[in-house]
Length: 211
Image 1 (cartoon, helix red, strand yellow):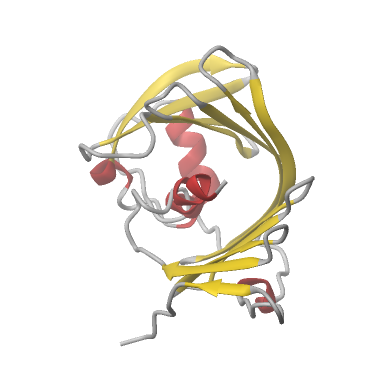
Image 2 (spheres, one colour; image 1 turned 90 degrees about the horizontal axis):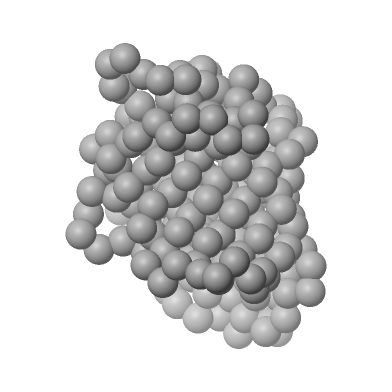
């Protein structure tokens, strides 16, 4: 799940500026234009190379331009991930542990934050239209960097915006996220993007402070 976060924040910090954009790119541009925040629900399924389901969970997410995110997993192993613009807080509720790490501004380190600022997408990824799938238009994103956690990222879009994200790693593991109940530019309490470790939990890592 933590591996997924590095993918989810890049979708909040990139931009598509190519000529002759296809339907999926056009839908992403239209959805991203004027976007200041986003609320959504998701279902996540992780499959092995042979297609077996290894993990399945659900949750909620909140995003705010330019670099804030709250991603909450429910289910048997709840987890809370908060990016506050300086630090990323990862709270493993079951283990009673909070991990702190600096929040990178790199799109490669942070992909659902791409939605609010699409400007670096083509610099960070090779972008390809893949046609239609389940009434969605697909985009394939392949990292331009030699080393990446994911071989490729697939984005499924329709006229309502982003509906699906799929990440495939070098070992053939596939993480599929389906989005629903999307609210664009709604009211979000700012406390969603701050995190205070609960009393009694183990805290690992060090805070990054503004320069």
